[in-house]
Picture 1: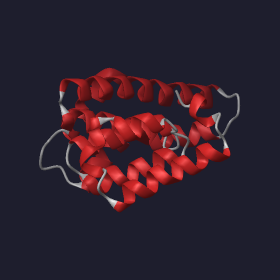
Picture 2: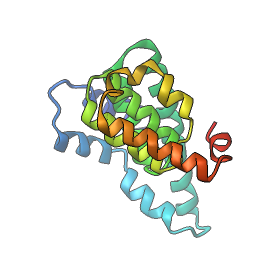
Picture 3: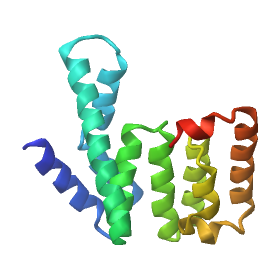
Length: 168
């Protein structure tokens, strides 16, 4: 089975409304991300590590782009599934985590939205305007955790004002 066919099958499994956390993790594992991540992490110039790194980057780019399109279309379940896969590929990418936090916030999952939003800022997301003005996070703005996240970002921008320019 080719990459795209396997991806579409896994995504269809992830979109089943009654899917539990265990089943979600199993479906994502079928994309072979953990195995590929281990190969890519070896940082050697072997064919296997290079192919694994390309595979992970390809899955991340594909799911990030699709997830953002799904957000635009208002298909929140699909966006969340796609962006969770993208975040699985690059768990320390602040921009990817920010997009996943948007999906959670729009889906009314405030707890996950706040957790992932904090992770996005901790991992380099620094667009303060997006946090303060984007309507996606309107329901979170009255939460103490949201205020702490914004304050954490403001503090980092005071220490390193060029960080805001790098994240855009």
